[in-house]
Length: 382
Ligand SMILES: NC(=O)c1ccc[n+]([C@@H]2O[C@H](COP(=O)([O-])OP(=O)(O)OC[C@H]3O[C@@H](n4cnc5c(N)ncnc54)[C@H](O)[C@@H]3O)[C@@H](O)[C@H]2O)c1
Image 1 (cartoon, rainbow, N blue to C red):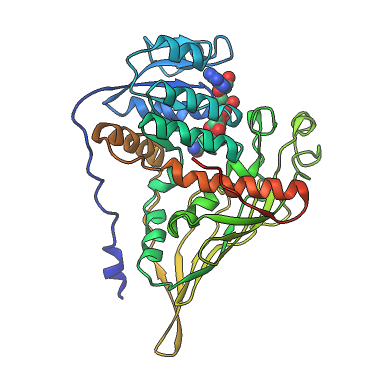
Image 2 (cartoon, rainbow, N blue to C red; image 1 turned 180 degrees about the vertical axis):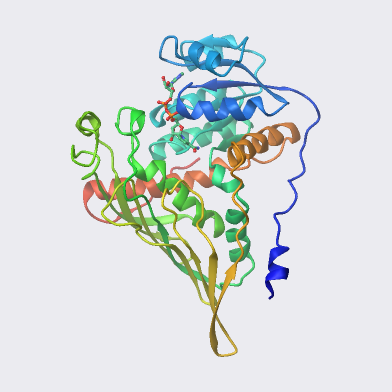
């Protein structure tokens, strides 16, 4: 195929918008770091208005809306007070640290609201099951905040697998991670984050491949977690090292339904540039997804397929779609697709029923690491 032909390879047009002009009333629960991306993206979306917000830290929400020049937002000291007082909301964005995800999502669904819940879905599988039960009872839309799903390259990975080009998938290596990239603030303590790198960026690494292969159920996990870097005053800021009690590295060997093996590793810090590319091996072909340095869920490029054609071993590249790096590109799409789903009474863009299985793997790896041997993953009934 000539370069001229390849150069014509352009991203598909924007997906159809379900915009009927109605303005949706949103609330933000937790006005911390990630909420900053929410408010900036929502300000650019004409049919969403943030009318209410809550934060546990006195004065934080006031400062937050002042900083972004947004007036008239009704403020509350916590999510329960907000849900009790507000009666005209369409949706909430749960932007709290991880340990508060379940209660904020469940209380909001029980109030009859649509929920966009930040990743990771929860800390444990038991919490994730409770969130799913609340979603089922409410009949509302619950979408999980995985913006990499909005990336055309991620969609292409799924299209390649769905096309049958790789044949039957039997082995997947996924993960990656950072050489040095430990976050701070509320990410590094169990009392707020619950889990570390495995939840923060591990959930993305799992989603790239599990979404591509249709989220088969996980059956068993052998897991390992450690935190040699986060707890070290040599590698981490001493004050952060002293309070660091989550994982900064995790690895797992997971058996999935359909005879598929998932070999996974993720790191916030390690003495290596990468723990490897993502590889999907099938009976007809293999797909290599190069790792990226930062590991924030984006696929590195170019994607490469390895096959045998007429007895010859061939390799070819799949041209990458340019990453949408406009301000809030993928992030805006994640919020807009959620709003569109509300307006069209459609499916959640990133269904919680899928991410429940992502959480089951994280939970299985954490629990196996704690007991030091392989465990069976038993999915709670929903
Ligand atoms: N999608 C992404 O790209 C992305 C990026 C960064 C963080 N995150 C996720 O966003 C979440 C928040 O991260 P952050 O860095 O903004 O945390 P943060 O600590 O900066 O902010 C969280 C805020 O939530 C508030 N809060 C907690 N429980 C509350 C409750 N019940 N009611 C009201 N307020 C409550 C806290 O007081 C805090 O101000 C995490 O789960 C993280 O994994 C996602």
